[in-house]
Amino acid sequence: MFENIRSPRFMDASKTIIGFEITDPSGGHSQIGQFTVPKSDEAPNKYYDYIVSNFDLDAMAAELDINIARQQGDVKIRQMKEEGNKEAAHLAKLFNLKTEAFKLPWIDKAPSAVKMAVRRSPNECILNAIVSSELNKYMISESVDYASILDEVDDILYGEQ
Image (cartoon, rainbow, N blue to C red; front, side, top):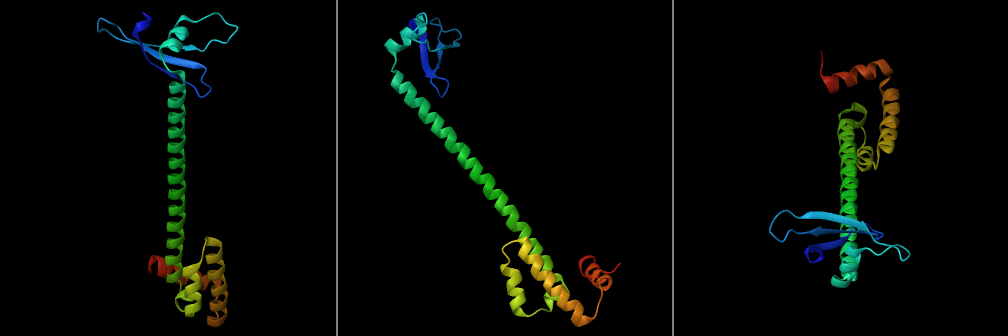
């Protein structure tokens, strides 16, 4: 029976559970088994004794460590991809806001230094501050109120109804 034990391996990071496969010598189905590594004060475990004497526990531990490191690496890569996707979404949103800003007359008619500042805005807060500042200048120079500005923006963004 013990000679049919195949592929023993540690199942947990603390290396306290060993899993193994018992093959049917007549070619039937194999079974999966596992047990907790016995502590020194516990009764002997026949499976553990067989595995210790016929398999390399250090190699089993090294294989588990490699698998854990691989899984952690996979998790790290997945996290990096998710962070990259979030950053890409943030940059796409910022780009779209900048594109919309250039449709506004107070940015379109602004000096090139203002347009450069809009292009170089690192985040929405700075972009909004620049657009707001230029809006105030535009409203004073054109002598318009907020209602007129909103009508003008509606015409630009949505076309005349």
